[in-house]
Image (cartoon, rainbow, N blue to C red; front, top):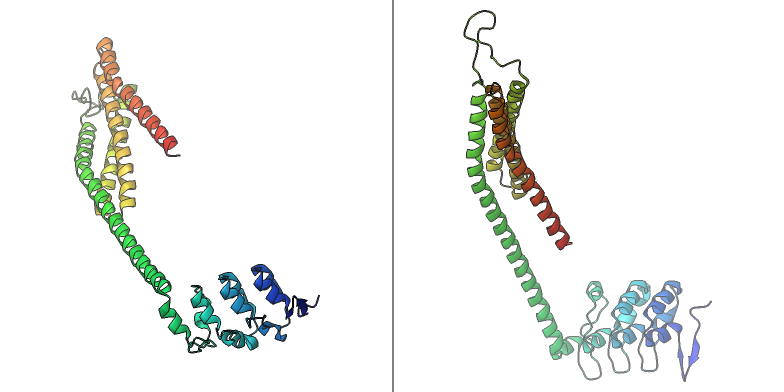
Length: 321
């Protein structure tokens, strides 16, 4: 196929490029230019009113077509079609301004003649100031950018304020939780040296040893007390780290971990009390079992609350999705 072939269209000679441009076939124009011989003078061909392909695209307000022509037109013809004037003396700039079309790609082209006059003796700059809507659009664009920047700044400031509020809330909560954790740590530490049933005081090889050390309930007492001490001490360290951290995300994670450790340490402390009471009251099984059952209601409460929190969280996630 000879893409530079000229054929008759009505009473004028047109190239396929001109026909495609006049019919608004942007993709066809771009494809033809990709196949067109770079040395062909058909790039500068004009129609019956003296307009080249760029003029036609500008008059039709075809932004994509103009961009495609500027991209694929050979450099040897680019300056010529940019400066060409139609039968009314209008250049590409005259037509773009007249139809209110802005092409950013034209800014980098030095071949534009901003002082060329058409038959009405107007330069492109004269027409620009006569087009109030273009100036208004430019003003609107500037105002829009300024408002967008202002809104972004406000959103950023609001986000920073929210972060500070959350940080302050977590730190206030931490101050209260540190006291509770310190109390748990103190109690579990003290219990570890206050043995239920006391120590042997009668002399001999067992002097100073725990009286109930061979009972299974006493072993449970010591292990649960050690777990409570470990968890409460770890929670206390996390709270100290939380108070020194300024990152809301890290503070939230540390707070959640500390709270979880605290809850488990309280559970372990309750188990310590039950085991210790059972050891001391082993000679009164009825009373020992009654105390254990009453204290075990605490674990039932924890289970019920955990199920409720899990269920509420699941409902909230389902509503969000």
